[in-house]
Length: 369
Image (cartoon, rainbow, N blue to C red; front, side):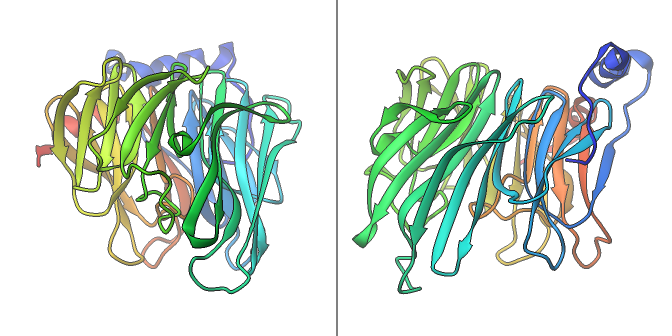
């Protein structure tokens, strides 16, 4: 995550090669990080691009930034209305900005093309809490913003008196509007997007947890970008999911990461994870997830080798809390990006890029839980 930016060009190809094949040079590419003035509210990482939100310390206003991990350069995308969720596609970024008052929440889904910025509003949601007591809010919601390749997608729904949910939708995010591809309770909440497939987790364990988002607590569905149901997993314990290639990884309420064939839905294997694991992401044969304490404090960022079950802690530090803010870490072919917010013992907020060679080297020395 960062501040000034210029996109990949021929001049950075040697650096990309160094990131991808450091062993050939006989060295490991060093970890790269960038300081942030405030608290990171969430991030997304695709290709060499990272988009992230910053909330200045002691100030309510937010901003959105870009960082290119290959060139090390960044830019400010938007100086007001920072995001609670972020997504990156090949030539676009998107985020959900949240604001309002104690009795009202406003959400704006904003997009801009890249590299030239041209901010557009693709959707708006508003909900109210007139009594300021549970059930908290009634009205429209935007959540589950995901991106990959040329596609951005988002989930939306409406809540009414008595925790009733209606108008569930899974939509593709256009320049100025949304294109709905799936309707009903099975359309929420989008969790992962890979190679034109969208994984949706139908789980009351997802944020906002006080609403049962569908009749089946904890099933996973994978849709095409045309809305066709490709596979469905109905074990009933899912709270997060991630797609990569032929693998669907599911983080469960029983503290396991379950692995399924992403083409057939067949169960492959599972591995245990610690209590309060969250923020699951997947790339190739490596899954990352964070483990949070019962209360506020540093989290431990883990990497899990799916074939062997070897697990290692990549980093520690305070980060955006699960289900109320954006992702704290993501993995892509180039490596892992994660946020560390300022905290007693952590002198500064910063975002870390760990090249894939370092991730693989660390996991090889891990242990099986």
